[in-house]
Image (tube, rainbow, N blue to C red):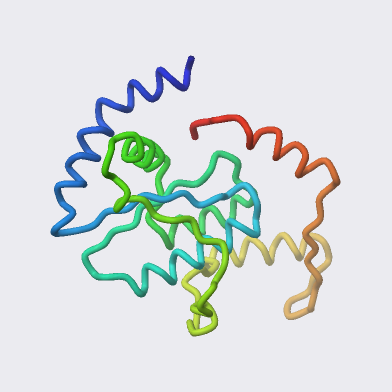
Length: 176
């Protein structure tokens, strides 16, 4: 019920905006897409792959993204948001664009694999830690005994129930 109310409320601003964006198509193609932020592998891959696609696209195109509700890594969320145009409201633009016929040109296809080796050809990814983020991380490591320039191993581990919980929630339709 709450989702229906949200969709109804957002229709008052999102539908006119979607129609306006469609009228702009001859001048500027605006596309909407989701980045699956629920799993770190998809989250990082989709962010980088979309960034590479944006670098190669025509100048008169604008890609807008929204992240899925569950965010697997808050730091990557911050970094990806600095690199791509992301906002929670893009979900509603994407939703209404798909509901209104003839909006297929404004839908970004989800990418998970670099089928053409584009990532290998880039010299440097745009996603970097800010100086204050690096300082925060170094201070955190020092708190646990790390010394400057000392090597360390980072592990990504989770228990066996993680994916089971995630899949239960993934099957429910939800709004961000």
